Length: 77
Image 1 (tube, helix red, strand yellow):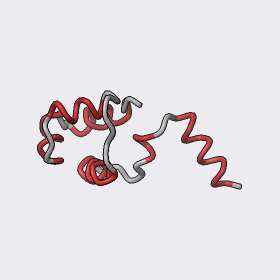
Image 2 (cartoon, one colour; image 1 turned 180 degrees about the vertical axis):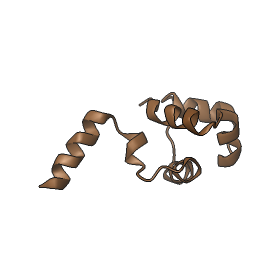
Image 3 (cartoon, rainbow, N blue to C red; image 1 turned 90 degrees about the vertical axis):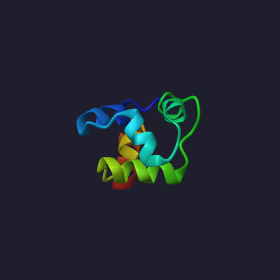
């Protein structure tokens, strides 16, 4: 899974991969691998990312829009 929404949020907030990697205490190359779907984020990392970028709902950056719509439909039932 590639994190297009995460990239967009980083741009919106003026956050570079290097700055975010430092905040997460991981190497910039490691963060790049995670953003590009070569390795996975840990739950702790995702929670830190959402906090740093001011994202209220982590599912906004984790799931595709189609999958998010399906989740919303189930929650409305």
